[in-house]
Amino acid sequence: MKPIERLEAVLAGRTPDRWPFVPSIYEHGATLLGRGPSEVSQDAGLMAEAALEGYRAYAHDLVTVGIDIYNIEAEAMGCRLKYHGDSAGIPGVITHPLAGSEPPDAEAIAIPQPGPENRLGLITEAAERVARAVGDEVWVYACMGGPFSQAVELRGYDDFIMDIVTRPEAAHALMERTTALALEQAERLSRAGAGIYLYESWATIPLIDPTIFGDYVVPYNRRVIRAMRERFDTPPGAIIMGGNITILIDFFIEAESALVVCDHSADFDLIRERTDGKSIIVRGCVDPKKIEAGDWDHISHAVATLAEKAAGMANFVWGCGCVSYHTPRESVLKFKDLCLAADASGG
Image 1 (cartoon, rainbow, N blue to C red):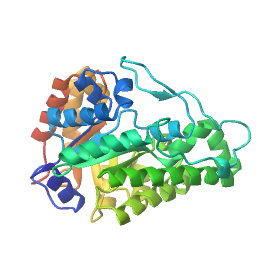
Image 2: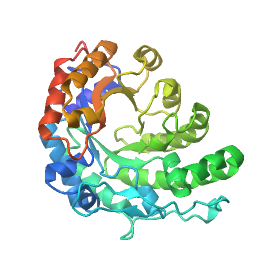
Image 3: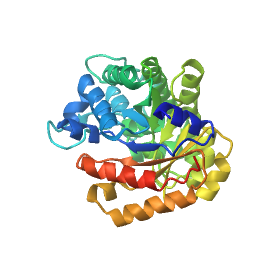
Image 4: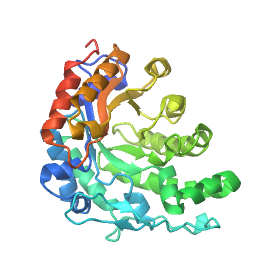
């Protein structure tokens, strides 16, 4: 099977020839080019080449385009980032322009358009290059900050949570603005031929509780995912975040996410039950820090645990969190070998 056929089978609940291998390759792609993440994140050609070099190195079954995966939309809306030149540092948000005791007037917040002052067009160009090069053989996804996480970056975590608790109308108003940008950017990336990954790390349990997730993450992310699915024939959109997602699995299904990320401690019996017969991929993840450290006893145990928990699942894929900049290429290849050797798909 081609990678694209393998993922299409998994999404449809058909048993593939083997469980797909889907590591998270972002800043690690810069490593493969011998460049720093900040440098690669500011050049469409380098960003595209980082994704393609990762695919050449690991022949994984899903390719993602992006380096600092949470920042592009927040930066375009006014957050300042710290870049690190040629060093290994990853760009990160250092200011929250809407922070303050009083919530901002959401209607006055402009929705930025692609231009030289932001990177909205840069990642679109990179995604288009990658989709054009390999999109006929493998699913290509582009990275976006999810609407909730964009709102947190703009307002600041403490202020936004206080808005949710004391001024929910102000919180929803800001979410409407971040969702408006997400819809426009998702359309640009979809036209480039890429699926949409909405990164919602600020929505991880226990940073928020399930009620907030249901009220402020699900409806806004679903709006973006559904709009792209209805208008474009691209890989289906998904919400990406770590943490304990077991108690959130019904919310991911409600949000129409095509993929959910689970570590080896997740309750796979519950997840198997909830996702049976639904178009949602379950990505079982190993700790990428252990891969960087070469802790093969831990990794082997985690892989074996995942294989046992997911035995016979047609909608399971192998994965890990963000492979670090410093992780050796050989370690990723060894991790892949362990996963494929433990395959229990029944394919």
